[in-house]
Image (cartoon, rainbow over all chains, first blue to last red; front, side, top):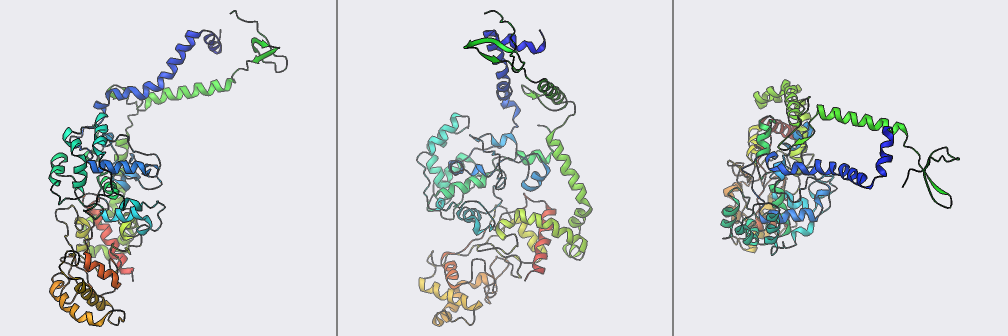
Length: 247
Length: 295
């Protein structure tokens, strides 16, 4: 029988055909799944990597809820124009605590992977409230209600717990104090503020992100999240300083 | 199930599967066109070549690197290096020469205008606007009125450290909330605001003249430390000139009243970590140049 006749013969043998289908279909799965078994060795090391604070995580949830990822990517590719415009290209380790990752695949707006601390809090607040106020040509929708909607904090501990279940190293202490930490991060004069520094490190940004320390709004959370983007670790800056050498 | 007899369909001339489904219904077994096998083989051979030449298969903790040794990180590093070399014709001169020297060289200033436009658009325009004219809360950079000094060296330093930023040497400035924090009574706030309004609107008819004179005394007691006795501001502390026609938050009476009542604190990020010294120098020259051609 010729090469072209092979399939006719296979089709007539139920077990043979089944085995053939399993073989062919598993190749795609293997190529995608097998590398995950060694992901701990293949992703760069970043000892300075810190986790999202409860307020930043709440902001991240709002980012997902409002569908920001549909128009903004968080992934700077290894291309000259992107590095020139946005900064060091993204490393895998920077998304280590992103569940789910928000790399995105479409840029109606600019990439946000290095937006943290690029602009001031008041700018973010004005821009989210009505983008046209600061960027006249913007096509971004306005998110004015963020300023007036109180942030829900009673379930923040559960969000941290869920993140821990998929591998983010939140401690019991962090989970127990999630709501208080979210409040204190946007109110640095509060007596609870020391707890945030103790649990999340001195470098944690503690400010009234929406300009008003007495109310914890969704704006606080989203701006806190935007201001930490690209700043959980310095690994990307170090890699590019070494000329992109292999890890 | 035996192999059925080969059975050729008389209408199309192709073989059928040989099975009769009933009522004379048979299924054609049209062969896949040979050209499809040709392209399938071609694509397969290409992929084999690609696996050999390019990074392809994961192997536990490493991967097949490919004979060409292509690495995207090295490629982008090389391309950035190449770009820096291309720019070095003028970048070295901008880095080393002082501001006056660069400003007097039309060739270099053309580079500044071209490169500065992109840098400004990417980094500064979000707040200060594409035309550098700012907006409520974000200073207009095309005027002669500068909060922290308008000399190139001063602007260069402001870009480096920012205002109320995270930089250790940041410019620090805050206008107190005189009304909100109960340093002045409501009526006194109105008086000060009236006086401040009258400075830039000497012929104004829409304010109560009875408030202006007591406002002047209150201004002398509370505001001159930063804004100066002549109210012309002080670039040492980032206090704006209140006598000109340029306003950051707005120069109408209501906005001045709001400012005195609630205070103001502007924020400008530090650019020392984000932009190279060369980039910051180009931006300095770019905004100074904008101001020269501005109104």
